[in-house]
Length: 199
Image: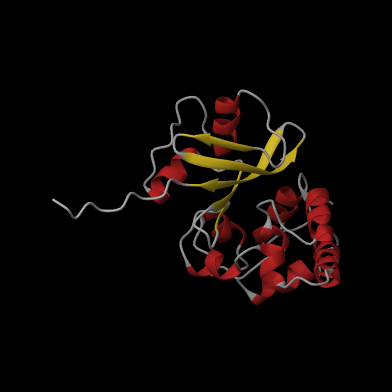
């Protein structure tokens, strides 16, 4: 079966889903997405997003969409995930998946979800350099390359969910941990200093 024709390269979805699918089911059953898997679990039309990930997993034609819906593994998985979403009570799509408008309408790097209070919910794997570049910050990236790695390096422990830390003027709250990995955290940047108009 490995040699079956795959004109639409649907294997890319299988390869991406395989290591995370059980976690996806658990998150959907809880009614809240934490991981970064939306593009390859709920395929969307190419061009809807602006990231390299959305481009890679974007569905480019009606033929590809039909092939996906007829696939013996991908179609049942999509149906199962959709059923789990439909079974969630008391939450709308944005409460389950995060701010959909921001993900599609603005150029915000993947894994970063700005909040109304000015904080950011950030996936642990997010590169520090990407945060620095996007928000003109200066978080150090010499000892760690990801935001989770920075927190562990500075805290010198693997934090528990709910723990709060302050480093380099930023506040960090651990939102989700899986074994010894920080999966998601809330990052609050320093408040900008008011302009001094006295001089």
